[in-house]
Image 1 (cartoon, rainbow, N blue to C red):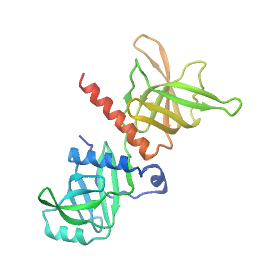
Image 2 (image 1 turned 180 degrees about the vertical axis):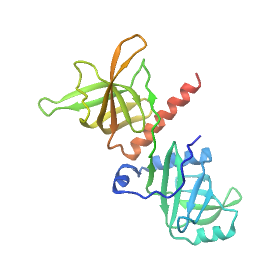
Image 3 (image 1 turned 90 degrees about the vertical axis):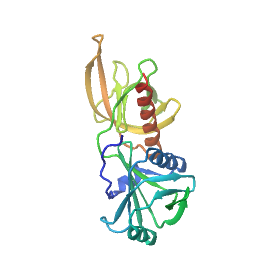
Image 4 (image 1 turned 45 degrees about the horizontal axis):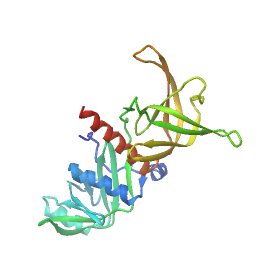
Length: 250
């Protein structure tokens, strides 16, 4: 189930516009289809911040989406006449938000509904703590980091201990790349099996020592994603969700 995220309109900063904006039509459709399949609650604002209805997605296709009407005819009329609508919902513990200029009253599967054109951009804003997923031991994920400048440029394959929407935990072994807190590594690549490859800048935030069940001491470098774009965020969330579902079956 989704966390109880307040479905209030989020004020978007310039950083939000760059970091949390999703413009891929494929990823937008994937995200909205999830909301429809799970019948996630949606707030549709049509005026001030006190003018809204709670609704759900009835259906979606590549052209647009259908929303359930309000029980109030007066609200439905105001929504149909509004030229500034804001859609707010939640996806995987993150707030989802986009705006539309108008809606239409139509029929969907023989029932009245609102129809919105598919948005060209959508914002997925994750403000709270991220779920941390321990990666497989037998076939671990790797983070490909490039360090140095030509002709001394080197490529490092560092094992990922855990991963979340906010960052990764990397092993820090003697003789490997020095993962010192404060260092930043741009354009790091992580291949997510059967999902895709994400690219992001990471910043090393901390370095801690952990003891494995066998008694071996392992150093973990906690790293934060600094420039993870919207499509990469969706791919990462899909990977985490798929891994959670697979483990729940065992």
